[in-house]
Image 1 (cartoon, helix red, strand yellow):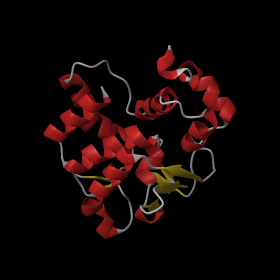
Image 2: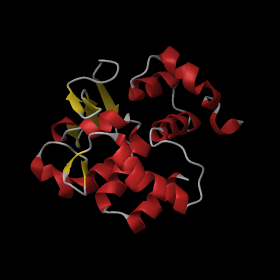
Image 3: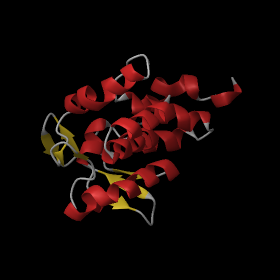
Length: 176
């Protein structure tokens, strides 16, 4: 389904939307964190982003939901999405992802959901789930690939206990 969503969006929407969605599926950032991500927090050579701000209900905050900054390691897909995004927003040297309709930061999820996410799921005849589920998809993919729960929890900004409570059913990965 991830590949179908990304491919459909590539046909119907501007490239920055495709980059945004692919980044979300393969980085695990919360929606508010992805909205608040700035270019100065992207380290291409180190292959990571520093997550320490968010946009929540239209307000840019200098902290995340958990008030703890974290370094998120980038895999090849999230890194590729950021590299593609460079030509659209890096020259402005602030927000990585902008609403391409207005060339402004995303201030709430509803506009993205209504304009891009919901129409895509309808076209693909997929069961609706909120865009936030891209985060859950990333968590389950990490576990099914055999990554250690402590690393996965750190990537998502969870305590290990919270991570296990939420995602324990995926720990055995593809063996089940």
